[in-house]
Amino acid sequence: MTLKQLYLTMNYLSRILIGASLLIMFLGSCSDMGEPEVLLPQIVVEATDIDFSTVTIGSPQIRQIQIINSGVGELQGEMTLVQDNTAYTLQPQGVFVVLADDTLQAELVFTPTAELTYTAQVLINSDDLENPELFINLTGTGTALPVPALTLSNSSLNFGTILSTTSSQQAITLSSTGNDTLLISSIDFELDVYSMDVSTPIELTPGASQVVTITLQPDGAGTFNGDLTINSNSPSTPDVIALSGEAEAAVSYSGSVQPIWNSNCAGCHGSNGGLSLSSYANLMAGTSSNGPVVTVGDGANSLIIKRLKGEVGGLMPQGGPALSAGTIATIETWINQGALDN
Ligand code: HEC
Image (tube, rainbow, N blue to C red; front, side):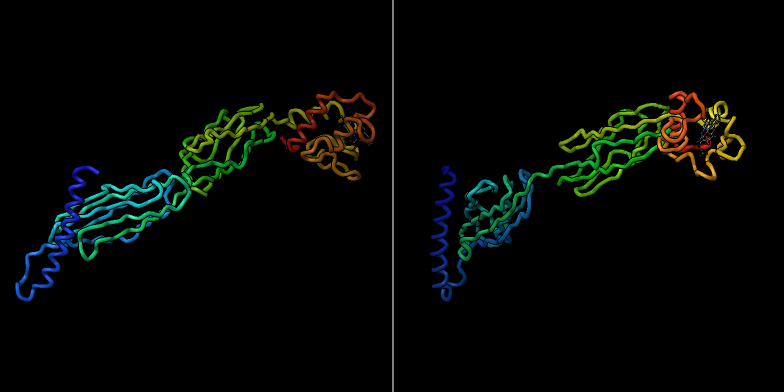
């Protein structure tokens, strides 16, 4: 205790004694002596309970306590924080003096350090004879630090094999799964054949999500493997999604397939009633007896490929020799690509 505090405490105690004796004198003598010159303080503290509710661990929350002296004499007292932890701080603390009609502002700070409920009391003793002891109940609960988090629907995305003249789309979902706002500052593609339908920055509150549609637009035939990188305020940043896809040049029916029929099959597969290979329409019509010879999108299971490989029935061309593996592959690819009339 400093000398000043000691002085103030003594002063405060003596004032209680003086105040009490003056009151007794006043009560005993007011009838004959008229109104005495007693200047009594009057303490007013409005808060009886302060609830800080739920507070993030480590983040200070501040409340004001007001000690009002609505009396006509100087108020002296002492304010003490009673707690069995260090979650609360009070400033000022200890002895205080509030002049008549004046107010003392004190600042109460709650800083939880764990996921607990903290209770404490502020005790206020004063020389107000009617309210010599007041207290304010404090409560507050700590909660875990808010942390943003990004959860991806996919860690990789495969666009398969597409024609180099077409494009393909796939969607991913970015979810904000933390308890703080997720800020996505940028989404970058390693390869510029990939693009997306959203622009950054993207802000996602906890629980919100964003669907992003990614487009592969090949710039020719080739394999396109590259990363998509998401930068955010999530501790997991940067988040990476591996993108892969392949584009192949379209096989032209008129430019590559029909010429094969013309030079190897036309002699026997013209307009003599069986399978006609004289045009796209005739090929796709198949035969009246055995049905289609092309299964669109499935070269390996198309009858015409099976006959060219000698897997079923007699090898075509009838009497041989077989077409080269490369030539058969061209036809098979054209069927796999959708057997287009291109
Ligand atoms: C020398 C004559 C000859 C040549 C050349 C020939 N084919 Fe054939 N092809 C036939 C005959 C005859 C049949 C019917 C008997 C059979 O199914 O084996 C036939 C049947 C087929 C069938 C089965 C369709 C059906 O009618 O059931 C396919 C498919 C076929 N040929 C494809 C081809 C292709 C493709 C070529 C060229 C690369 C070719 N053929 C060349 C004579 C020929």
